[in-house]
Length: 507
Image (spheres, rainbow, N blue to C red):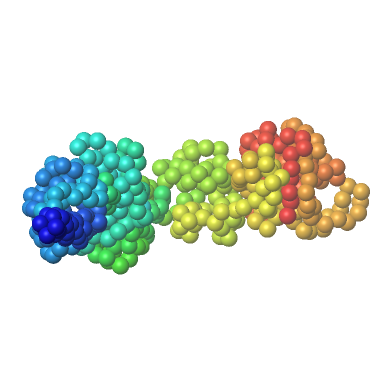
């Protein structure tokens, strides 16, 4: 029995020992910490980016791969933290860490693709305030990159400082992004493309936009000799330094420098010139380039140097210049004949009336000056001249003929003199031109004789005998019985423009 008991007892001891050993072995395996990768920082970047890999059981890490591209042994910080560098040739995919326990896959890392950016301007030179378009293009491996954020930057020449210009944009499907710019000074432009998870941002080179100031010179079309004449000009933007040079050329001659003025801190400038002889002159202003702007040249302006005073009977190019100017201002004139004739005298008188000058028909210095900067008459009832119409300005003693609501002809006239006379019915009447709104009711051709005188080609505006008509005598003051007198040649030019029903305002 003892022997049997020993035989029976021994296996139980072995079994218990084996069971204990198994239990210990199983316990040891269950409590060992397996390696794992949980987070990456950053989650995207280009080749060469150092990535922080965190997890557990990483102290025995011996190798890291980025989407199967080997990055080599990592830098081990501690059991939960290692670092690896994105290797050349890596592409977007999972990060895997190899430890003593084997390979542990981790999250995906996005490998950014490098990009190339270029920038260009639609034109390299502009005159202020005009601008140009700045266009940048972003590509990766020769292919356009869309939806990439872009910021336009500008640097004024000489400052060396880059500042953001306008709002940010992003590339379109062709990889383009553009802005319209209008700088006040010569500037360089570049575009900074920001990063996206898929692509690396980049900064373009620079493109220059050169700005020429806007330079204007105002020159009178005519000016009397032996008299100081002022030429005025503007330069924009207002410069902080430099000067403007005035150049003059006589017919057939070369350009000559005749004056210089400083313009630092000033947008306006003047030159004072005079002429010893009659003739034609051309002027232009030149602005040399400076640190922030390129040079500028104004348009060429021409001036006719004329005699000091013109009057009836004179001839010459100064008379022709006068006639051209009066025609330009819409004063009724037979044409630029070069002779100071009857029509020219009345055109000058009409001009003097509007300008508030002596009504002598002589072009002296005040008239020449007024011709350069004239007071312009205005219609009171342009709506009633939407097709055509006539207005009689009693205060200025002129007739205004309008087309489409705009004055096209200004005529010298003489209206009711205000005196008393004996009418055709034997009663005493006052020579007053009626005021109000009328229209042409009927017309007669040729000379028409009435009890009060003769009328040439009258256009009657009421049934009481009042008319716009030609007259041999049209003084510079009110003198008629009540009709609106204009000269006979003027009536010949105007008659066809006075159809029945034409609106006539008298005020």
